Length: 473
Image (cartoon, rainbow, N blue to C red; front, side, top):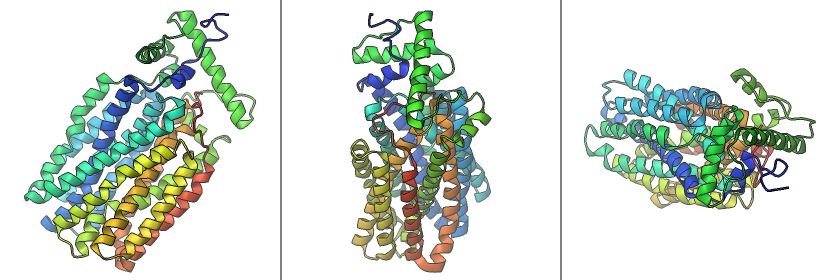
């Protein structure tokens, strides 16, 4: 039997998992990562802009919380719809459209003259931003070889630190520079609208998604191009007969994987509609994972956005000047990058669940300390620790989420988990002013610590697919 015979021919998924990291993988990671960084820049900028508008427009904390929360309301809807659309129409197209939507809305925000119009535009910014994040992580995970998939997703998430650092630099140098500094910050946030065209034309569609939609010839062409970049010839000729055989092999491989993992006799049929994809999330096989991942996403979003959206304003209230508080925030933000780096290494050593839970416990401890210290050195040190552990946890969370669902429902599962998390990100900015009045920063950050601990416990209800192939049903 030859290497290209039907019995030995590998599926598209197996060939993707067998590849080394190539320049094409780097293009996928870099292209998606730039979009991710631009997202982070937009989310980060609003925390500095709220602090500036508090002084220029005289908005109170309730109004500032509303500006933040309305964006997260859009993100909740966008995340839920984005995943469904990506499973229906493809990862690349939805990725590009979401960049375009929130880039244009952010640029338009530079022209607003009152809070009402700003709230409307922030909602549309949230729609695009919320849809983009789960789609990007799903997209990269479906190209990544199994042995380094978790690490690549954490590296993708590390682009968030690049974007947030860019936001902090803009917040430090641009926002306080003039009365219109915050408008220039919004104008810079329009860059994603231009980058959307790069994404649309320069990046390929996910071959796993294409194969799942019956477009096997297109999927074969993309996989073959990756093999050529790696210097290994394709072992499937692009003839109709061989394409059909490869598709059958992929189905058989996924079915066998499902039987081994779940003990059921056969893999469920590929969901054909949005309703059936949603039903898959709550089927007997996946409902435990879905409940656990929703709890983790909810708790992490609550604590992260509750803390980091308000840190510049909390520091101003503590008596520091606007520029000084922005400077502290910039230093704290820089700790995100080493947090991602350590998580990227540990996730392929410890696995997903242990890495995620350890970083969440570290986040809880850091939050308690940050809420109780008052000296500059202690504020910076504990803030950097919170930034380190919290963003490392985010990296692990984005790595594990797409892995727990099959290809046919992967973006839907990731999108709905993110959407549930955005509910918490809506509530948290509104609740922070109430907590600050009731018990100051000590109570506020103690509440965040409790949410981190709950998330750490829920992590153990997930499956850990470190080094294992994705479920390509």
